[in-house]
Length: 459
Image (cartoon, rainbow, N blue to C red; front, top):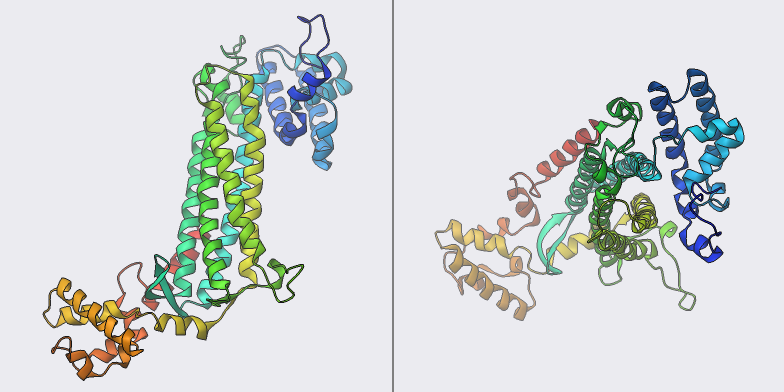
């Protein structure tokens, strides 16, 4: 059953119908469409459009339909209706007859779909925040177990200074925390109810839209009917948050892919998240991580797509806006699955502690300590920097680490270097000195872990 047709004298071409119909994807908003319809029934009852008895009948029928839909929402997808609105209305009429035709009084599919989508987004935000929290909790467990496992930190993919595996993990917990906050901010911005805006100019009935908004769980009603039906900022917001978070997951995946490589061999991934080669029997490929990295581009594409769709779109509603859902649904599914998959990756990860410690000791990662040592002897940092650079060149030529150079060798470059240089070149000393907030001092790392555990618990 179409929700329109009196103006037309010919049937729509089947090719147009297939091109136009949206039930194959907007069926996912069935629950929200029914919930919005229950709210609308109450609203039109409050202004005398339907009686109290009719409200009871409509509400009962809609609740029955909600129960049926919740049992298998995917079965709706190929039911042959134009969209989720026509599906719900048709099923309602099947249950209550002509009374079902009264429900749409004063309402348009324009404000109806805008309301459905916002309700759906609100529900998804809660689910996504749960997945972020789950991943953060898993990462914190790994960080606690490896807070003191020394590994090299990198800049430009070159060994720079020693950090710990726990500190590296906690860097991504910080990123995920910002993703969680962005979702909260997105929820705050979208938490306004468009229902009652009708097609574009507002409903013709004296509906209390603030009461309707509260009834549907929104913070308040929208304030402009034109904006209400054409606003898809929340779609852009969520796709933006998804894109930023997928970027974070992709960076984490890339780090782990490098750490898992034969050349680094810092970590070993579980068999549960890796696959083999059809030709080379020795291979153990980090497919879960590579897919997360690859799927980030897919999510970025959906953000670009909706921005391009909305660009220069005149007010108010246009059919172009039907393109808002498939990309959003796919992006949030992809993000949700990627969060859960990254949690699974960390469930079985093994850290090769001796290997990462050995790597941290290599690459002259203690060169900055030697420069700071010279500064403590009264040498300006820029000059100290140059002296240490010369020491490193010499050590490389001799095949030595800095701490393996003799005092006599050090004095070739500066005579202020003495026996007291060796303790400051040790890994433990390097970590201990980084005691400012956010540094790699082991006490600071434990504090960061404890803070984030409490922070997450207090959400």
